[in-house]
Length: 637
Image (cartoon, rainbow, N blue to C red; front, side, top):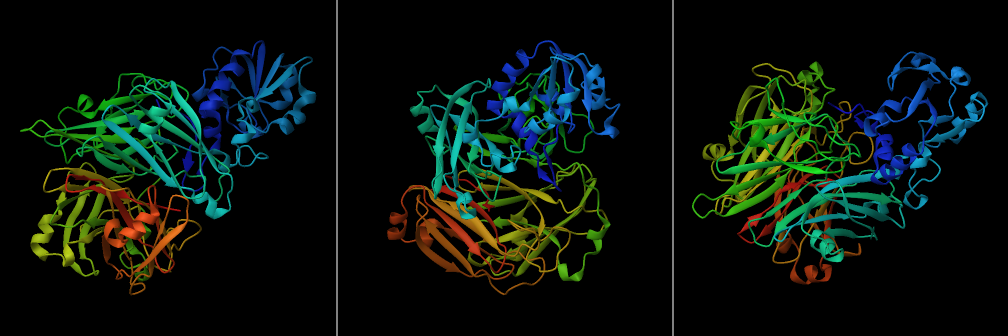
């Protein structure tokens, strides 16, 4: 059963009400509020949030004598099992307690105080308020900046570890005295540790080994909840999450979790030969996920196979996808029925070598599957000024070491078919080869091995380039602009892998279509770049693949600055690079910056990739020599 709560819309963005009501600290206060609410209770629901509160908290113990609304059009609506009455009827309720379902409720209480039965007391959701020390805007509680929060998969065992890495990008928007409140929760949802993490200007790193030692914790696999106070500019908490091990068989990086739980996720791969795929389900709410509320199905099938297991509040379950879909094999895809119970989850691929028995681990994430889209006829006839229109770029890593696989992934319930082609480009933007997938069915398993394109095109200049997925309507079909793909990279030497997935956009045109080309901050067109690259201390080396994709011809070359910062946010060095329009650049931290520069940058350094002339798309990762690597798309702000 899906939760009946509003979390996000593409028009309004994220909703802060559910974050405020379901915050881990609010959940503790809610228990005390509900236990203390005795007598006959009248619910006043001026903004229509009562049913959402009941989704997160059990209100059945309350003796509710009626539900009252101020909007006359809501009279008669079913709210908490009652037919809503006009607030003018409140005097006849016989209530001894009036529960106002609203924050900043003082003014609304004043409005109805004269309607209260004699002796009735008032209470409201203000009883759940966080302390003022945690608020950015103390005068407006539901200001999105008050709930700049996110979840992160977080694990530390005797051999497996995790690091969350980001920067205080809020300072660039004028924020000061920024801090991060952290709560670590275990698989059972219980609090393992909580602390305030400083967020000075510069980099922010939270490492599981440090936390385990600091709080003397046993091995754990859980989730880290982070709440940024005194933010500015962005209420989104973006980060890179590295998972690593005591040996080089464990290394991966993923994007942030996306703080708004969704109904569906897609792009989860079925296990390949000698693989186990674990979906880490981690409850984002203070209510349990009941058995059969969530499940999996093969993309294109009708029925979900339910998980017949409860998940405790803020707790987690490691779901082996083969336990629900035992016969499904890569490159088949899996759709996740999430019911808004959890934010974008992680999946872990465990590969076993049949000869040695050794295991390799990597973690990635599926993506939000849209439920609000339908094929858009306008995309079939976009203005010639938009050229290729929507495109999805992915790197071709140096081919002497890496194999690249591409799998288009349906990411909207309205996508019954996918008319897709893939185009191979060299580093200078020259088109070398094209693969027509045709009009794919929703449940397809059409995997492209880029080696097959390379056999047609010949060697890539300098050994790298990029791939673009684009719409191709030669065989018909529809499009909604939400074209996605899963890209898998395999080390030819040792079999280590990495998955990354993302969606298409229109890039680098001054002409606009709807909200494209998207900008990191502000309205379309997005024609600039600000990307974040975390680097790591030796023996690890950061790699970066920047793609100057263009839907239509734009500036001949980028004018891109790579500015290296130390952990305090002080600039150490800047390099300028120029990427041909339609081309790409693959580079390593150890090669771009000399030993002196890297030494002055020190540990927890980072690079800001800035370009005011075009929007670049980037991928980042780490290399542990020739033993393993990680890769995912970068984030900007």
